[in-house]
Length: 475
Ligand SMILES: *Cc1c(COP(=O)(O)O)cnc(C)c1O
View 1 (cartoon, rainbow, N blue to C red):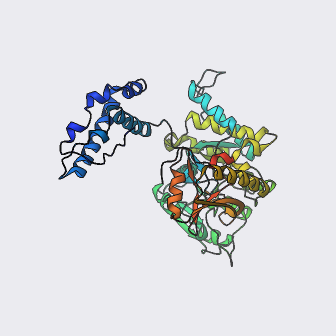
View 2: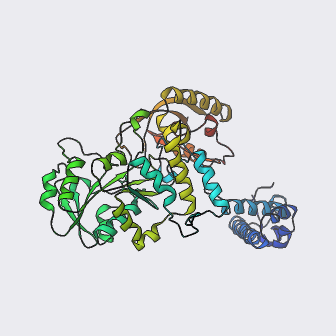
View 3: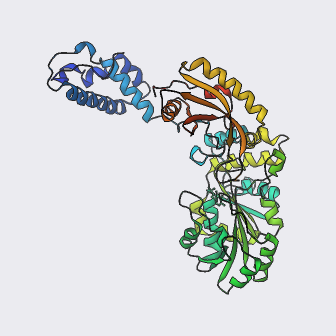
């Protein structure tokens, strides 16, 4: 195909470029029209011709020689329009190989789903499902019932509810239990989660009044006692998921907080953030508090995310006292925050894995990635190195280096997971140019730049072949 940027041009671009009609009747256009409507192709053909015309005029100012030989044919223009359409109308979001070293990367959609969850999602997508229909009685059913029993079994809760994400869960809890009343929060837990989700602002939105307790580094149970008034509605404890206060610190035990709240007749709610459903210590990771532990220690409600350490789809889960969950269900906000059948199906399948899988790391990929051994990563690195050496020009220097990966999504921020990375370096290129080359592949390979070098971290990468850029455009 001739280049679409004519090297030399004419004063009269119109005479060099094919007409819209000629492009649309080309063989290439005929192929495209089997998949796409004429009107959508026409728009792109016009856009391509406009671009070309602008280029021809820009380059051709003052020159008058004809350049029919280097000007694009009708088929060339149709093909260019086809490429534009492909990019514009790609059916899904761009697929990415996560070589960032951040395993649950919020910008990359967090946890990859397990096979069972993907299958459940697909099944629910294809056909009507009894999302709110009780098949036995024929009456209207409860949307959250599809996951509530499993959540109760997995956490020891009396009842459970699902909304769109954990931020929504917090909003619903505060709006339901604390509107126009006070929420007691330690000064050490007034968190910003990211994406401008700041706890004090959420409280304000929900019409609750923030009552700060204690100090940034030390808050004692007596501080909560002293802050309680008749306007108090709940004690909120939040998981310091994306930061750590170290040194001279103090934080009351859950059971002590629960006792203070109970004595005052108000609820004690814990926002666990990540909410691992199993003891992560059995996967070689530091222990993360579980909803079961929080409830057992006296929390009335616990909120956590579906797509962080749990490894499921985006969702916000609330578990705890049945009377409180019933109040949350009745709040009109719940309707606005509810999840759809696809999320419910994927979440249910993920929870079924937790309930019954003989090999959880096999069925929940997020856990498998976090639990991977260094020996595994070393082997993966050797294979990836060989594959990359085969396809990349010799100017690229490649080697395996030690690397530190992170859980991501604010979970365990100070924890570094030992990992390996392929360092890709080209003496005559900036690291960003190399990074762009990998990002332009399909699927896009997203690494991270560290000390002026591109690292492709292996902990989040499933197979060595994933790191071989396919169809890269020139960086
Ligand atoms: C991540 C997080 C949230 C928000 O959860 P989303 O599911 O992302 O909405 C809330 N609280 C804490 C402590 C978190 O770590």
